[in-house]
Image (tube, rainbow, N blue to C red):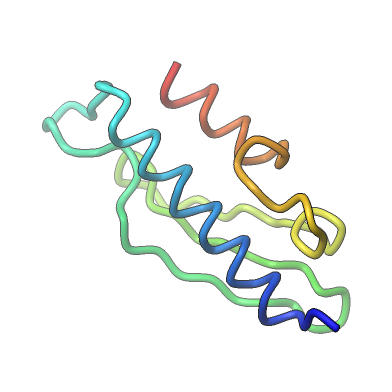
Length: 93
């Protein structure tokens, strides 16, 4: 049986991959730095299993909520996650 901890590792990896893809996309903020800071934090809302990622994008904190079905499953990756695809579209293309 796959535990929730493994799915958490997968969503963290997908977010890190997304950040790397955006920061390596040749777009930069006004100061020439990466668009999203590599250091970010997360927590889980226990009552409904929402995974919360707090990213710093262009110097501003942004919270992204992943509902249980968006991060607990076998298709947790950048290509399959709508919210990560939205970040890629907005900040790297």
